[in-house]
Each structure stands twice: as structure tokens, then as C-alpha cells.
Image (cartoon, rainbow, N blue to C red):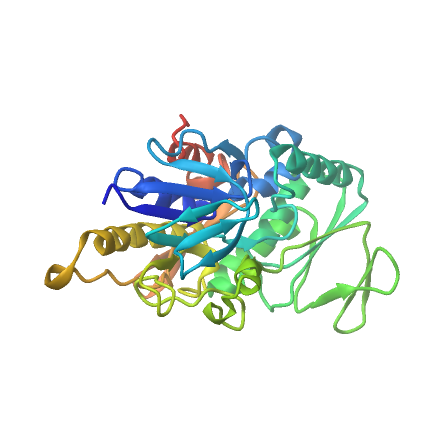
Length: 366
């Protein structure tokens, strides 16, 4: 198995976890267009607070002891030659290839360009705009929209903030109404205007926004926390559009293989294994795929072992910070969900945004 080549395309949460898991058992090449790991969980605060600007960036240089990281863009997967073709023209041979290109997130939770410096400039731009804004509109009342609204409020106690959400309750995708009520109570207690059942679109005039009823909101700054888009256009352009479902996610079987391909896996936000696109699900998929890849490379003939099957994560803790010192945690318990408050949320996520944990994942001290 040490003579096997594994190419992991994408250096996000699932990609780095998988590459590290397989580093001791095969020749691993991790391909990513970024020059560093981008800790997206810390990016909302980094887009608001200058002292957090550099926190989301963790170098790849300690991730792999035996393998290597290639900074570049994958153009296509040549399944006939079993090679990954890069934009530079380089071809990476593989025995197994893993698609882990994740999803594209709205600003400010986005890595712009290909270098740390480019994204730092983007963060600085957001920080300056927030510092000078009179009215900020946040569209989307899921965890990201709630968290971003809280971060802006704590950084700018004097600015007017409106959070517009198309659903009837905040955090409605969690299925826990009490969590939505608690989030709304915190926001309104901190003078954030919460508009529910408000589907927003840009208005006719610059700086105006219109809801489905025709009501106009004027705001000099807006952020749209309304979902993500899987990074799979390159697969379609590379001739593998049949690997994708209607939403653009890679179709996988229960062993996380691309349908019909024994040597092609897909993990994390990029696949259709679960609708719950959160970091714990991506890490769990990476662990299972690593085990299945070892099994595939190390089994033959009648002694071949069966792969493990992925069970989608439907109930997992969800933590929504309200800045560094408050938040809520939705904790699944048998037959229900408990909603925990500040102490648990701060210890688990809000204070550090899991930065020490991810630094250790990439071989650095916390």
C-alpha cells in the first residue's frame, strides 16, 4: 500500500483530515488552490474585527510528514489514464482520487483569490465598511446570519442592524423552535431589528432592498448569509457532469464512492451524502472514507473486505456564537433537543471558534 498514490483535491476540513489520516499508508498529494488552510469557522469574526484578521489562516507545511501539498487548480480527472490534470499542465497519477473541493460561501466567510494577502485585503475592506456604516442589512436567519449579526452588533454598538429571514423562525433548519426564539431574544435585546417571513432581493435603486410584499429597506451595507454552492463546476467542465445531481453535488453511494467508480471518492460539503453541511459531518465522512480507501488498496480476491457504510448525520450538536462571550448550543437528546446557553457555547466554540483544535489538526500547537 505504500506504493499507492492518493490524490486529494481540496484542502478544506474534509480534505486535510483525510490526507492526514492516509499520510502514513500511501503517497498522498493534497491539491488546493489556496496557499494555506482557511479556517472558515473563524472567518465571520475575522471579517468584522481587525484583531482576528490573521486567525483563519493556518499553513499546510506541517500537515503531512510523508506526502506533499501542491498549490494549484485541478482542471479535470482523467479516469482513462487515472490522472488528475492541473491548470499548470502537470498530471498527477492516482490509484485513488478524492474530491473534497467543498462549497463556496458568501462574504465575509469566503477565501478570495488564491493567497492569504488577497483575503486579508478583503477582510480589511469589510472591517472598514462595517466601521463606517450607518445601517447594515444581514439576509438569512440561519446560524451564519445570526452569528454575523451578533458579531457586528458587538463591534458596532451604535450602528443600525436589520436581520431579514425568509422563514417564520430564526434557525428554522435546526428544527428546534426554542433555539430560534432564544436567538431572536438575544438579537432584539441588543437592538437588532429581526424581520421574519421576509424574502429579500435587491431594490431598483442602489443601496435599497425589497421584500416579497414590496416593502423597501435602505441600507448602506449588506451581507447575504443565504446558503452555499458546491465547488463542482470544474467537474462539469471537465466532462463529468454525469457525476453531479441537479443541485451540483457529487452523487455518492453509501461508501462515499462516486457512483460507478471504485477508485473515486467524494467527501464533505461537495457530495450529496447529507443535507446537513456542517464541519462534524465533513470530518466523519473523511474518517470513514480513509478506512474504505485503506480497505480498497489492501484487499484482493476472495479476501476482499467490505467497505463501511456512511450513515448521514441528522442529529448533531449545533453551536451558534453570539460573539466571544455568549451563544446557544442545540444538543440532541433522545426524543428531543436541549438548548444550552452561554457557558457551554463559549467553552465549546464561541471564545476561540475552534481555532486551537484546527491548528492541532494541521500539526501546529494550539
